[in-house]
Image (cartoon, rainbow, N blue to C red; front, top):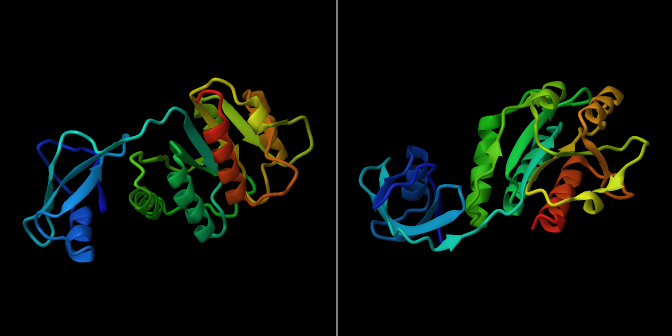
Length: 234
């Protein structure tokens, strides 16, 4: 089934954005009256009929009862340093969306090798992953932020994964009853000593993801899966 996205669904019919309409008309070659699905990215998918009325505009006539409704009992924010390889970071964005991440914060750290971030492209990657996976939750992609500023603004309970020596608990063993929390993953060169110190001063909980040295995108997905499926808040 073809899934469309509109952040502001209206009943009994809703207008698609020009980009979404173009995708349905020009790419998918949908005809008037064909059954499609649409989500507003807030947990529900609705069925409807595709109604093109120009080459660039279309509406969907909707059924008000959702055909799919998924709760998000644990809301996880992944604060992750963008990678030098944009392909690898986009792979993380795609897979994190499929796994049900709630928010994504690109962290600009002292050891970051990428400082220029194409957030418009990243948003398109996330949208494509929502459609492909039939995930009715659209993750919120935040603007890139320096680690120092993130520490100042962040108010969530935060688990901080790093590779430096020190007392760290296994992430799976310290997840509590919280229904919302954040996990920080550093760049390929890890967090700097000063960033690790600032995280400790902010009360972030230092955690380990195991004995192996993982790439940033692998570590981020590992942490997300642990948080998503082993949280005691479920």
